[in-house]
Length: 121
Image 1 (cartoon, rainbow, N blue to C red):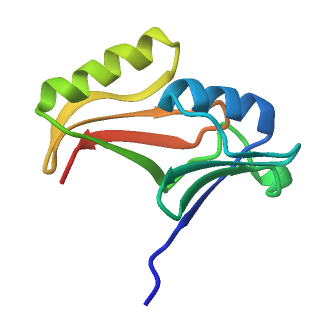
Image 2 (cartoon, rainbow, N blue to C red):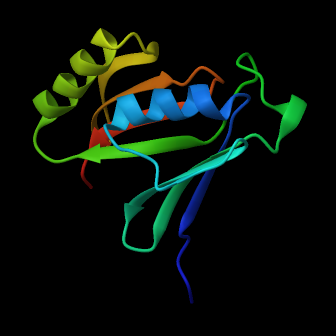
């Protein structure tokens, strides 16, 4: 059975979202169009931004899904990412805390999409 290989995030402004995620993850897109931008994040795996959801993308709409970034190392590695991202001006949703799976925090992009950082499982 094939594994998921496209992670699509709904955004209002592809250019602004591209700037946000390029800076946050320190990566550059591999494909860019006015309404769709893709980042190659692993062999055969894309993280993409798309404006195709139209009026359904609103910063105040609660999100139940998250983009995840698992970092190697101890809880201090998660705290280092938090300090780095806060210096970039991200909106913090949950400050660093200990959860059942380890140290974690959550920020959001300008459209309200959630990004969680945690240790590698």
